Image (cartoon, rainbow, N blue to C red; front, top):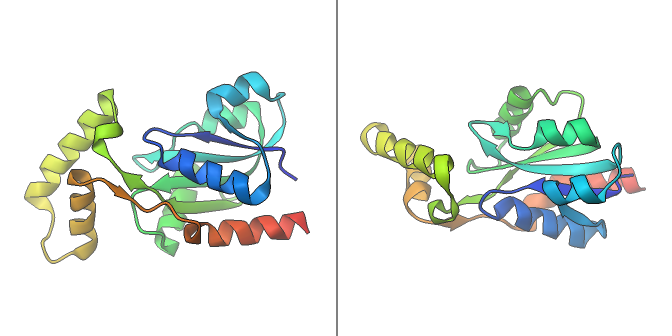
Length: 167
């Protein structure tokens, strides 16, 4: 059984999911930096991280410190089997329970290089995004207008897995 939930969040969407999971599981919840100070090395944790170019931010650091029971990646894409498959492949998660969650986007909450990268992506997409591709247009819209998709419903598969290991 996991001892805690540990997360790395950039704009708050991953933190919201971590706090939701804490409410449903009763597990304590820590930001990665806080967990490094508060939890003993090797503790079994559920890790949540936001995605940057498909990579789960903070995962390697968490893996070097804790025993990871499950990984949840939080990104902009719709919650589909393809998004989960890409998450597993890009982060080499074949042997760990892994889940993809749709978080959101709010460029105003970003800082530094992350904000600059998103602004550049938006500029490129404005010229190249196919107008007949609803997913591309939705992604482009998210870069310009804040969106929040965090919900309890998105946690369905994860909560089912958690109930299964708890039984």
